[in-house]
Length: 144
Image (tube, rainbow, N blue to C red):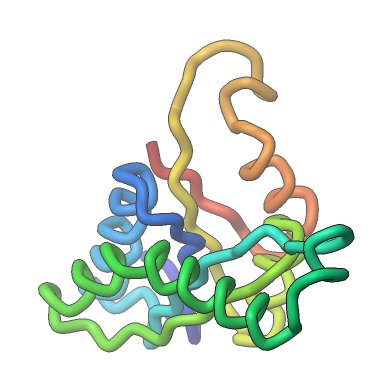
């Protein structure tokens, strides 16, 4: 039996893979492995050229809007399971942002969905998962 942890952080993007990751985290919460569920969507930074022509407010609004879309299905799954989930939208490089939030939230586990291709480890994980694993200081569970 796993020791109870404070929180589980699921990195979600609205795909069926991220829904599976969310379900996995909800199962862990259901058996009492953790107290809190946090859902995080990471938006790529709209830097450089775009930032020169668009106000910071507009960029923030865009990230928020896209982030809400990426969170929607995971939020619905948590609601259906009657698990209160806290949502977060981060901006930047996936691995760094996820690791950052895991640290700030005191998460004992990071969960993310992966497309689950077989083959070499690099192909298997995909660049996002590799990036998260490289930066996270806590265990990372990949759900395919």
